[in-house]
Image (cartoon, rainbow, N blue to C red; front, side, top):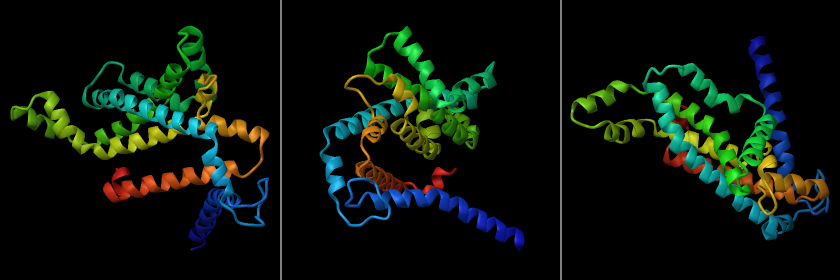
Length: 260
């Protein structure tokens, strides 16, 4: 009993450490003071109006959304076949390939960002937007391969072979048999990759340029010179958007399916 009691206390401490800062952010977003203060002295929605009326924040949000969406879709197009090949076939250097694809998730983000800066900007001399998009694609690709690969490890490939024996070609069997059975893994990888791309700072910090700045970098720059609750208001809106997305996923697919 003492052991379980100690584990409960430890769990409460950990969850409190994670949740209390979020609660403070939510509360400060409604404060009337011109600086972030807790507890607040009054209640107002004015900081949300400031955030929504700011052209720089709106442009940064749409850029982050655009880059995250395109990079994630590109990662799905490349990552799903790659994960299928790594799971389905015995390839030479299979472990080495897996390590290569998963390396961006192991190497510190600042190192990945600087390496991509040297390769994309200095070596390839790509335009800013295309370079930023390529950098985000390379960062989120491992998440797609890892999550989809995990779903494929639970898939019984004999079902696919039965489809072959019944006259279904490999392409048709892949789209009609394999993809529907790993749909939860695909949706999970999409959400994980999109969120990681949207919130990415290290890569964006090295690959952004004049007129092309993502939302996280815009928020960091804003905090350097301003200490008002606008950033808290934006954070609340992003948290609310995440909750809405997860609610929709739960109603359409089910959170339990994403854990498979």
